[in-house]
Figure: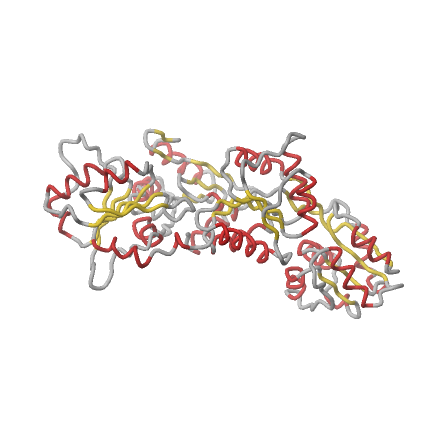
Length: 489
């Protein structure tokens, strides 16, 4: 979760200095040329000290950079944001504080534990749990804290949980007080243990909980039994590899997130501009020679309209032409340009396109087919067999995203992925390339394919197909994954 204002800041950052426990997918909205510096801290392991972070912020800002200091949670809730702001002020650097969403309320909410609830709790406290138990004098007033508010929320307190429990009971908190310990809050791996002060330490030990955790103490913990929601979504806890291009991954990822999954966006392909537009430009300037323009992807639509603009043309150049779209996403891309598709096949594949056009009397008609540089010949050969004339032109290039593919390979081999999705044959081929001729090791991950052609490519690569979309669309692919796990449960 992130605020709209924070996203706006990331989108215009020259430099991003970011912390541990952040979803690094948030960085994908930053300008491609932005500098991204990790300064995360874990117990006894700091990438940079706080003084070094302060100096880094000052140096980058004085160098004329627009700097975003991206913190987990809220910068002013145990985030040391105030300290960093004081340093900036001292050095004459203008700054803006963007409030965040603190884990003190968001993580309990994801566990179905409201920190306040009518008739149960009307107040709550947020306390650091990261005190050294060997300190002679605690900075926490345990005597007052034990009864000050109805709900107590401890951050960063796993290591000191035995001390927290002992102090609360020492100062009069009932041993039967409900306690919830939430690990990896808001992530697919989120797990919640509930118990009481008298037994929660043993439960945490038995279940091998590790940081990061949030500890909630109070009667509101009992509400989890009714209000737990995050754990109950169809794909909760599943890590799903999204192998679409960088430009297309977000739609699939969003659907997966809504169903509780953790999408891992490691694009196997990059969509890039074509180096030579002479063929496409010639076609655009001579559209009157065609009866049809057939689009097989959203990328083709985008590239085509980009060339229209470059050539000082607009949608009026398409007057009198019939427009075809391979599926609903491509048809929607046309609709966004105020163009309604005249034809969309019932089956969203190359074979489906050709089969549907048999009833359109296309013999002798000329088709313009703007698409990727590596597209196969299925549509061209099929239309030719119907007597149509086809001009196939390269509108954009599809290239392997080498660095991302290597990362995907490492995660698969390590068994960190539950499902790998293939939304096109090219994503399969490029992932195969990552293994350099070795057998593809996906270490138990399930394989989900958007359609039969993609599945055929995956099968030829030696992969077993576990999940097949009944409708060759992104929503269809997600629905198939969801159905698979429903049957498994």
